[in-house]
Length: 412
Image (cartoon, rainbow, N blue to C red):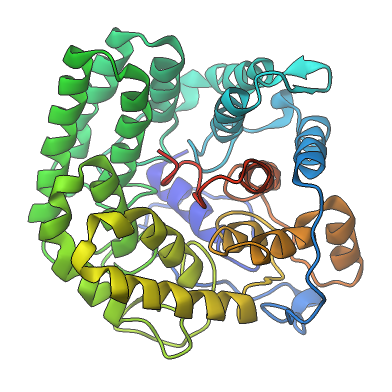
């Protein structure tokens, strides 16, 4: 799959209508929202009212139910290759890789979670020859080769694999490389952090990772403001400024003072509604989801707040206003997922609101919404950021009482 094709496929993750990828010689242009809705959804709103009594479900039972649906409906051999940590077999392997450390005794379909991580990773490895490898404009978490090397390095604690991962800096530091999380340098920083936490006692490896991160961060910081992706100044977590700021600060907090002005500017973009625009200059206030809008900004702010002591009051006010918007407009009619659905939006909230939102992502509730034609199905219904695997992550956060974080983004 070419870089252009892969980019087009991701943009359809934010769309109301998906179609199969076709090769194109012209560069795809990103869209903040959304192709025309399918014929059967002309009267489907973006969200439904949050007016039901606050309820909850047992998160542990729902986690197991979600993982069981994932394995039975989307077994490893049926997952097409591609997508890195965002969608596809590597993304599902990464979910099980993380969960098996949290639930070492858990069995699903009579197997421990580590077995399922290996099975989905094997599915990805079976297609290794089809992966083009990272390029300057595709070097973030969506690259399969980089993601697999990072997971292998973290699971085996193999220093040679860390060196291989750090050598990808030759690509991420090329002129013209993007800076955002999904396809760019900021996503590479996440992969470096993923590996770094597994080598806390190895000074030589830590120095290599930190030196590599410093080189990448310096290039991001030297890039002209506002940061742009495909010519557009995005604001949100996936393609925009808050995603870049978050990845830099979580990788090396000493850069926070030099990012204060960028963060102040971003906070100033907040609408009176509590939402944030998809890009600047701002357009209509419409998208309330992790990729574009308040949920992604709020989840990011929660994880970087401590690095900006001078801005904490402003950050707290922005988070509170953002949550009001999410409570009002965050029960989306897209299939529940992390990127642009209820599961991701829930992670921006505190209890009991988080657990209340998650009740709309149970198998029973989704069937009811689908029957009422109030749910737009995902074209990647299995994956970590677009489907069932992401729903499982949200239930695990609720079950373990974890900090509200997005796996693959700010969980390390």
